[in-house]
Image (cartoon, rainbow, N blue to C red; front, side):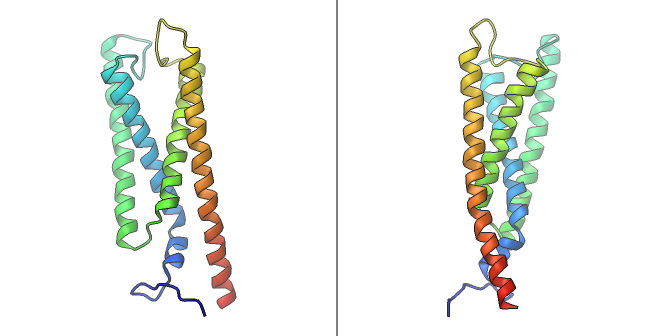
Length: 172
């Protein structure tokens, strides 16, 4: 007979993780979006002054757009951390699944930014007055790498949730 750690309600840790697997994933995705948006805002908008969120108008409009962008990223981050705290309180935090969500959220947002906002909508570019191709390549390849590694972690944790589901089904 295999020993499975139990919590106070006599559920195994694996069963609790299974019950909260989508919440772990969504908390990570929101945190990843908030984190990568913060990094983009702090480094490229504020420190390097390479662009604003919206560059098709005056500098004042660009600053307002940066403020709105920063506020939305902050709301995503705070919301995800409330979910994270709730998962910890319920003993349902699954760090590998959460980390997969972070990478998926950050990579997806960065790829969306690089393709939709930079190229299709032309809200802004990474930089101006330089050959943009190396910047675009690095930006989008980094985003794709985050997505791939995030999906890898999510699939890895999904397999273990399927095992828990199968084990609980056989136990009944």
